[in-house]
Length: 532
Image (tube, rainbow, N blue to C red; front, side, top):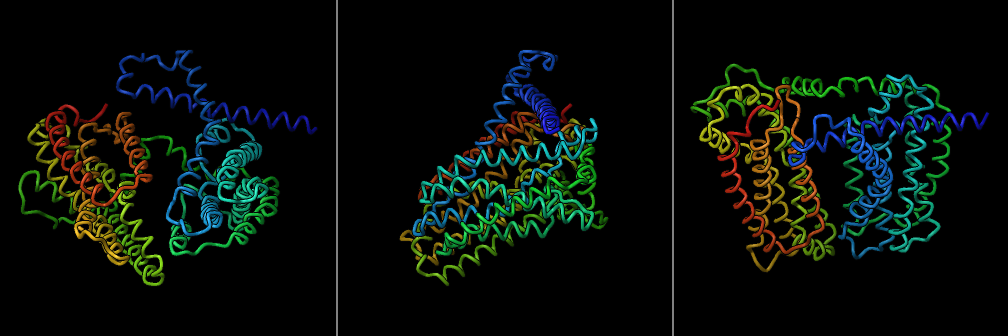
């Protein structure tokens, strides 16, 4: 009987992996077709070529193996051990403090069990596979991947920071135990309330909890406060028996079909990109003002743009205001911390003097460029691009300039708060011998904001990624976004004096602005069109 059950579970695992592998392979082939240099070389019958399918299958299997480890390595290298601000504290306590609170956040943000994915929909809803068996097999497989993926790096990074080997070996079990505990609590909550948890639709309370956890993770160590090593180790070790109790609940829970049916209820529409776009449009329409009294005294494209900005004020400015308020709160919190812990002034001053490159990634993260261009296409260019006059070089450059000024205003507000806040923190921690550092600090942050404003608007005009159904159809556009993200992330690890990096940033921004304007003028008349 046990042999039969084990054979059945192995078959379920093979089928589920085959499903994942199939759409992953198709995704790889589709991506190859989107690369400009390969697009003309690859035939229309790409998906029928056996050799390419074998190659894509090999890539898919390799990714399944590598993904179990590479994500964990980057996690430890960047988020856990990559923050070099706490040199005066014991490395083992800082390591455990950061890992503990990040593990708590990850236990409910990355559950696997409550993540609506396509393979679950195909298996349980279309192929009618046993929901309980399919869910358990894949969830246990994912937990084993967590344990195996974390093991080499908890030993590597943990031992490097003076933790005992026996504890480093148990840490992956502790992390998996916390995930199992949260999964069990979610299942108990489903039985009590009849409402399932969806990790892709976190409530405001959970987002607030996540922000609080991130604050507790990184802020207290900057002021010399960390959870003692013994307390962190005790909490981690307690997760092993709690995880066993959670595993028992996960295995004995019976109604996986109902919980997955609710979880996957919206996935049918999500799999239709046109439907997703329509939902986005409908959500945005409620934020667009229909007040007939809104008007403008300007003429031409300036009239058109001013009406657009006024009618879309909620869409364009709401998130910017929130980011500005949060940034202001963080600056005030930092100043209060400096006042309460004056002995940390010299260290914080040293950090601010060399940490400016990290703000490239921060400014990239808070920039509203993609939201702005998406709103432009859906509610303006989608219709006007059907007219030939709208694509004339002079017209394009004129509207590009007008729109650039608007997006610069939107992004400049949080940039001013951040730049001004950094200058105040620098002053409060002892200042600098060269007063120009204050000016360069503020101007360079504004220039980063300006760069991303220009960058996103430029690639929108040069690569216009949307079709008539407002779906993103440009592989090149996705590649550019991915490369931008990677380069900005790399700046986290760069340290350079304010004056040097600030001046380089300002010069680069000016040069990029000139090049972008020339490219838009010369190329946009051909590229700024609705995709087919």
